Image (cartoon, rainbow, N blue to C red; front, side, top):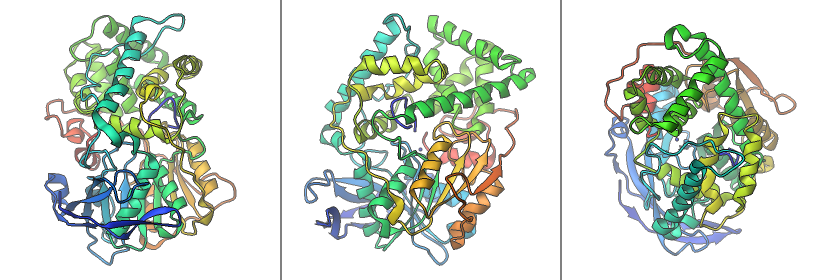
Length: 531
């Protein structure tokens, strides 16, 4: 999840017939998936099968035009507890490779007990059709993010024109699909996938925005849920439309950036960017000013800001990103350029298009640019380094050409199956208050909290205390005893901060984890996942 305005990772098919029961469109003769070996090398290495599931473009017209959802499956090797659907977040994150990801990251005794199901939500990745508006929208150098409060300077006028043109291109290039990429569409697709898999119930593993899919799916289909792990909670009280969650998220990201700048200052002998947070901030601001005046190749002030913002999602990225910035501070932009090309995906806007298509229509956004501009300047007083990149990231919603719907309700009172919530206390993308809200809504849930950690939605990432709780739940349903109130039921000490290491600056693009010199287990994840 990333936005200023809202609360806020091949086979043939056989058509079927869809009917309506109790107001919910469901398949009376379930669609089927013809599985075949996956062609993607990472999925193939996990012995995954791939296929497509046909679903209605418009769920109010269940016998009308169909689109195709790309699905992958890594079968259980032991006694199966059934399918486990996986969503990495976004909205707009490709989940097709996550069947292989969880196979890689889970203990073998856990992954052996589930059919791991990755899927690309409608409009995303390998699903057909896939959304795209302006492919190279993130290509640099772009105008500086930060406007001047007293006037409409050239950079602000340029961003207004860019975001308007992006929204217009989305309408022109994507047709009717743009009106049908809401959360409610995806959870209906998930229900169709359950039926196609022939399962009475599904297990679910959701990260970030994927936690909202889990919340809304279980609200709509409370008797169709088995085990559910939700990591990095989206606040159901502040999702969709022009909600307060955007303010909470932007301020939380500012706290993460402050912690990161302190970390850099404490390692000034390695990076030379300043010995205090204030000195590091001054260096960063001076670099942005120089790049505003004279970009270096594809790197301008906004590209520098985006690289830093991406690092605020995962502490494991601090070492390579800080090294790249330190190189650039000394005049060598080669590594920073390569890092931006990988992290920023400047030649592919599918994830960004899908992000907007969902977020801009899940609830109503103001059509007054002056209103959101005023609110952003107020927010920038407490979150100066995180406000404007988030603001422009979601600015197309102000001009979005598709009709907004209503945010799907979240009510866990009818969900009897206990859920496990996993949260980091200083997560910038999904602040801790969101996890407290989810626990409040789902009285059968329990929460494990990694105290003092900023990495977003971290599960099976090296904290044994957290991971042991998740493993016990998935293996045998054991949850921590639920305490009164909405705070965590188990609190785990955070893992140590990363330390500077040797960075490989010469590996080819595409091998993100190895390229950034990360530990093997993290490299394996990032090499699988297109960010």
